[in-house]
Length: 130
Image (tube, rainbow, N blue to C red; front, side):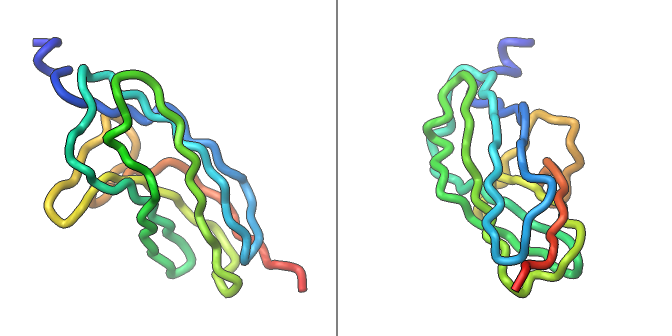
């Protein structure tokens, strides 16, 4: 039964590193470490997306990551989250998900999940100095 549950791809979110604070207009540089503990990669190109939620904002960013390259093993992706100059100052939560209009993939994680997006971190946006 264990082997059957590991057939194909099986993605685990190992870590998400991110700045604790950012300024309006900055780009938050984050690192996502994923393990494919399955026995194969996914063969369909489905986008990795980040979701930024807070201060009345709920924005989804499609990332330039080809998850078909996630062979069994550990993979680290750099995620760049652009923060607009007029983004409200305050607390934001970052989520990640793999989905398109037809498919939503599940991560093997205990992280909070909402509509296919998994919570990976929180940071504060501060006012940019003029």
